[in-house]
Image (cartoon, rainbow over all chains, first blue to last red; front, side, top):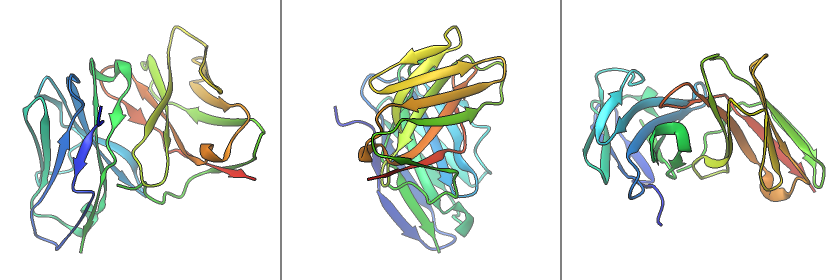
Length: 114
Length: 110
C-alpha cells in the first residue's frame, strides 16, 4: 500500500496566484481530511469528507479556500487568490469509518506564498 | 512535506530511560484519543489509541493512560531510543473528527 499520496511536495507561488493541492487517499478509506500545520496554530482541521461528501468545512479559513472530492480516490484543496499568510504545511489524511480508526497522513505539501 | 518548526515544549531524555509525555484535552464529550508521532519531513504517524471506556492500553514499548476525571492523557515510552526523537501529538475525538493538541518535542540524548 502506497499510503496517502500528496502532490506537490513543495510549492512556491506568488501572492495572488491560484494554488491547487492534491491528495490520493488509501484505497478503501471512506473519510478524507485536510489539515493545515503552522508554527502559530499547530495542526488545524480545514475540512473533511465522508463518502466523497463534505461533512464539516467549518475550519476553512475563508472563501479563498475550497475543497473538492470528485471521487473516492482523489481530492483537491484550492486557494485562490493565495496570500503570504497561507504559507504552511498542508496535510491530507484518510481513514475508514471516520476518526474511530485513526487517520493515516500523507507526507504533506509545504506551501510558500511570496 | 515537512513538519513545521513549532516552538514546542521539549522533553530531553537519556537513551534507555523511560519517557512520559503529557496532554490535557479540553472536550469532556471526547470518547476516543490517539497519540501521533511526527518526524522531521513526514506526516503524523499513528502510535496508539484508547477509548474512553479504558484507563490504560499497552502497545509495543508504549503505554497510554487516560484519566477522564481530570481530562488528562499520557504516553509512556519504555527504553527510549534515538529513533523516538520526534514531535508527539495527542488528539481527541467526540465524533467523526480529531482535534490535535499542540505537541511535545522529544529529544533523545545518546
